[in-house]
Length: 357
Image 1 (tube, one colour):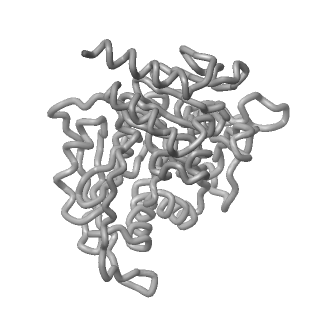
Image 2: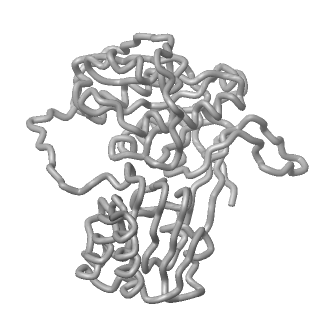
């Protein structure tokens, strides 16, 4: 499935003014989010194909101290928009800041994390600069559009091809934005891989402030109440023991808890488990949950719907346990066990505990 974004037409001369791959470097409470490093990693690959450099856009108040960390992860340049009005994330001042950077520095490509902040910021920025935005991309690459030459239609080169699941994951769409700049995409955390940092690396720092005049679009923050949760971050886990509808009940997840404890891992789950109220959404893996890349992923009682597989297929080793020998999960698994998970998991846990004694 192919498509191209629509909007106000930008003439060819203007398109040629847009250069470089930019990423929005999200920070919260003056701490860079992991998605910033993941986006830099992908941006380096795209920039190499285009023969250009990577620029991180850092927005906030008193955030200049974060520049070196962005450089160590691969940013060639860092544009810093630093202003007291940007102390906490608010839609209007951050939209104004990022849109102003685009208008001033004219990036060819801009990547934004599909976080709560990015999902709010990205669409507003794209509308303000009159370009398209492709959300929740799983693959980003440089290529031709249309992918295959069509007689009588110009084939444009060096385009950002943005691939994402569509129609509930039942098809995959590759989208291009050939007539507008920047080419914008949001990427979910965990989809792209960050590069190993290079200690001591430095980036060119550009300080830019477009000016901020509060108006009726500025929201006044009266108080910030931080939620406290004991839920672990499944995206940081090296071993995940994930359960699906086939586990049978919330009580049966105790078996998975025991296995995870024996392995030094973390429990996660499929959407069906969350929908049934057995586990919180923070533990959900998949297209509507989180994307994970553990060293080992146990898929227990999970059928393997494409929506779930999209969130875990990049795991180093996938071990599936399912009583249905035709379950799609076995198509992506490195190792599979056909049988009753409620009988297999306790025996597996017992065997692992015996090995580590």
